[in-house]
Image (cartoon, rainbow, N blue to C red; front, top):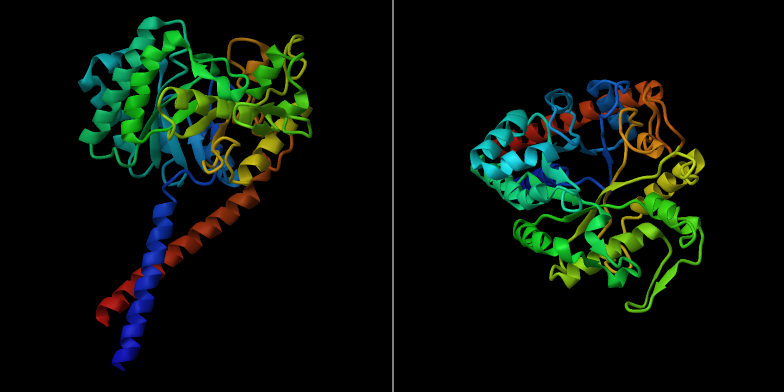
Length: 389
């Protein structure tokens, strides 16, 4: 009898341990695929409908560019992992005052935990390659103040602090091995990288093969940009072959990081996408090309592999963007990056369903939620049984 009780205890403990580990794993970046939920539009679905769309598409990783409370509240209880943004317009004030930073984190992050699963704060966007030198000089202290605020509030272990960079911070990105940071940016970039290295944050890059091809159509094979069959390029310095442009752009960032002394830092793609419509000087912005790029990128990410230079660093990427945004300034392409149209229907088919097609999927998700609650109840019962034994 004693042997039987010991065996039963061991089985129960193993079950509870495995279930706990599964719950812990779900807190990290789930898989490799995420989305940018931009809202520079006056005709897109409400945040609660967006949540239904994301859950139906099984897209768990989401970035927003601000800290809108109605959006953050809509994500409560969904399990979706949300990165909120400190806008460029807020960076200087947060940089200048630790108290302001603390209040910002209290009001826009801590107030919504744990109901909304906020996993990160993006401090500014593409700051260092911009034209505002005062803003660029403010970035590092803003990052430090936000991080220190999360430490004071006891949430720093669960909130990752980052900032996204455009490819404008680089020099000589072709071939990838020759890439370095621009000399005028290095004096600001290196201290920032040192701090991110200390707190374990990745290098976040906005990389667009669409833009690279649009600016250099005579030098880049469009098939190379679209992940289609092509000859690729060969980097003699590293003896590596590239069959797609995005991998080359990422490895160029890794080369610049290594040159700056940060070889171990991970690169995460915080924006990439392809416009489905553009102006006359953007002939590659077609629905067919956008579908091809995003479909092939989704397949690329599903393979859970790294790049030629960093094969062990599984690539993670946030796609730009969830919706076409009719209020964005700039060329026509800027308003046509969405995987979904403003009414919630798909822009083109890469395997997702629009809002009108999502009711059955939502019902299935509810059933899965019921089953998950049942598993937790079973775990609690077994724990009580273990204590009784």
